[in-house]
Image 1: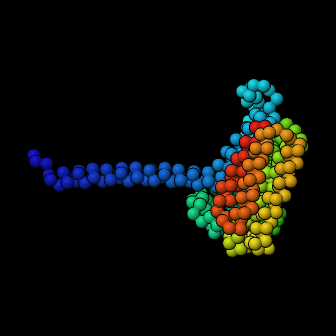
Image 2: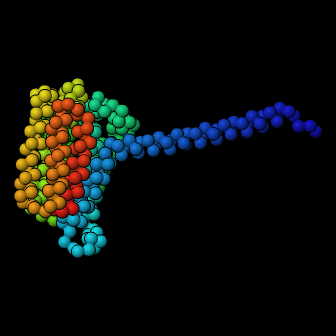
Image 3: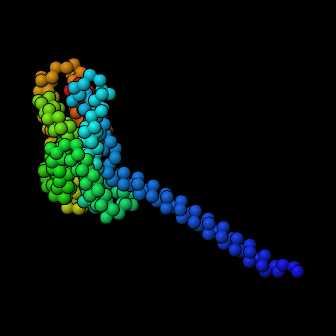
Length: 313
C-alpha cells in the first residue's frame, strides 16, 4: 500500500519545527551565557577590581620588604594570617566601592554615563546584597586572623559606608575623608604588626597629600554632576579657579613633607624617587591652569613611584 504524501509532509514539518526549536533553545542558552558574562564584568567594574588588586599588591610588597623580619622571603609567605588580612582588606574595600557606586549612581550617570549605564546591568538590589556578603566574609576572615584586626575592619567597613551615605555630601570633609580612607586601606598591616614608626607616618602623610590633591582635581572635572545632583564640593562652593589654587597649595605643602622624610631617611633611593615625584608635582602645578587631561595619568605614575619606594622603607 502506497504511503500517503500528506504523512511525508507532516513528518518533514515536524522535523523542521524540532530543528527550529533546538536552534532557538541554543540561541537562548547562548544569550543567557553572554548576559551572565556581561553582568559579571559589570559587577567587577562596580567593585573597581583594578584598584582592589593594586591595593593587595601594595600590601604584599609592604609585607615582604617593609615588615618582613626573615631573611628568606619565601619563608615569610608562610604566614597565613597576613594572607587573611590582605584578603579581608580586598573584600571590605570592594564592598566600599560597591556601596559608593550604589549611592552615587545619579551623579555618575552625568560624569561617567557610559561606564555607569554598563554597571547598571547589575540591579541595585543585587549590588546591595553583594555588598553585605563581601563585608560579612571579610569580617569573618579578619576575626579568624586577629581580634584587634577584626575591630579595625569593623571601623573601616563602617567608615566606608558612612562616607558614601553622609560624608560625601559635606564640603572639605568629603575630600579629606576620601583621602584618609584610601591611605587607611594600606595600613591594615601596620596595625597587625603594630609598627607605626616616624618613617611610615611621613610616607603615609605624603601619599595623603597626593590623594587629597587628586580629590580636588576630581571636584574640578566632575563639578557638573555635583551641581545637578545637589552634592556639595569645594569646586561648587568656592569656584573652579579657587579650587585650582588649593590644588597647587596642597602640592607645594607636600614638598615640606618630602623634605622632612628625606631628613629622617637618607637612603639614596628615596632621593631619586621623591625627586622624581617632586618633578611630577611641579608639572601638575603648571598644568592645572592650562591642560588638565594629563594630570590623571601623572597622579597614577606618582602612586606607582610611591609603591616602588616601599621596597626601601
